[in-house]
Amino acid sequence: MGFSHFSTISYKKSELDTENSRLSGVSDDFLFWFSGFTDAEGNFLITLDRNYVKFRFKISLHLDDIEVLHTIKSKLNIGIVIVENSRNRCSFIVENYTDIKNVICPLFNRFCLHTSKRLDFEDFDKAVLIKDYIKKNLSDVEMERIISLKNGMNSKREIFTYQVTNSQIIINPNWFIGFLEGEGTFGIKTGSALYLQVAQKNTSQESLNAITTFLTRLPSSVLQNSKILPLNVVSTVNVKTNVVSLVVNSVDSLYYYLLPYLDSSNMYARKAIDFKLWRVALLLKIHGYYFLPEGKRLFLDISDIINKRYATTPTKDIDEIIAGVFERSQFILAKDPLFDVQANIPYVDHVRAISIANRSEKPKTVYIYEGKNMIKGSPFTSYSAAHKSLGLKSSSNTCNRYIDTNRLYKNKYLFSSNPIDSTSKN
Image (tube, rainbow, N blue to C red; front, top):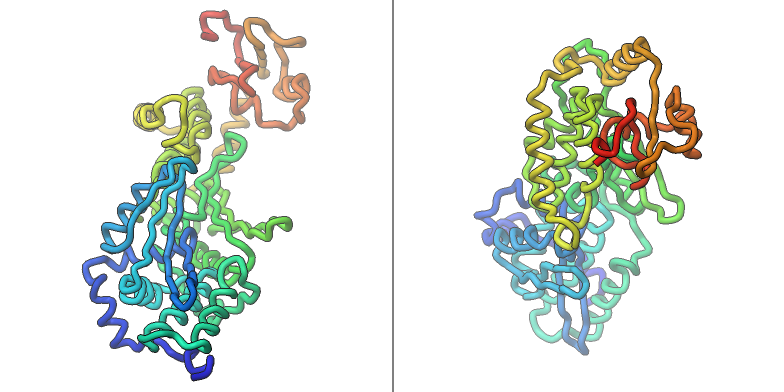
């Protein structure tokens, strides 16, 4: 039997339905999610021991995310979860051949992967089919075929040609949530700018194009003829790592387009906590609470803890800190908002209006304290002068972010619009 014979073996629809009966109790929504999460975090491995072939499916995560692995194991009813405390790692592993053949392979044949990991699965699946087709001991020819497949997978892969066109990659909403939980970031840049990002090697460009299409077609709560712009995805490439990042950073896009979709989705990993924190920060921005001292303090507190490794953080009890954030947010968000989101006015227009209103008041005075004393030149009559005194660009946003928040900039400088005594600073 030649190599080409095995390359054409595939599951027929009737066979796939029969094999997939072990997953009959698992919702399609979860299986699509699992496919997306696997695209982000999964691995398909083949190992050889003389004439014995072993197959392994593995998802390895930081120890913080062990609960999602237990969820996967419980829903699929296969595999084991192991812990490596010395490395702060945990893994979900399936290496029972029957589970590989009857669950893992049919699952990903039906709930397709979209990144270059799809190619690794296809080779993995071909090797499983060769082994299953022969049933008995593999001949030298069959073993060579499996070795050839193994040697072209994962980090050894050199060819990244897809068998589908861009238009054929259809992103399922649950797949994207799974992928987002693995390769996404709910971010706050420099303490003030919100963004959502997903990243992947440029070898998965087709899937990145499909994700962009999916995001730009999300429905929104924007009224017709409003000035809110359509969702825009910014694509950047790190030339050193060949990683492509897709970023949505418009407050309007995040609130009117992405938030309704995210709110209606199920998340299973620890990143769900990051989303909840990020969501509060987004609400503080879009409703204008960020421009109140208490809103800005809460926003900066969120930026300090979001996307941190929770279970292995040796400082304060992170769950207690997060609970405090949500409690404070309820109090702030219960106040009348500064901005009316129902008016469908672009966020930048709201900000411009409040900036003009602030400029019409008395000139800004900035007191900068280092410890108990004001720094040289303080108080300053403008943000620009205050920035220059610290070696910052005059256009920096530092004063705007830290003034009257009782938060230290670089754990050193305290900004205030009024003189304060030592009791106030503490």
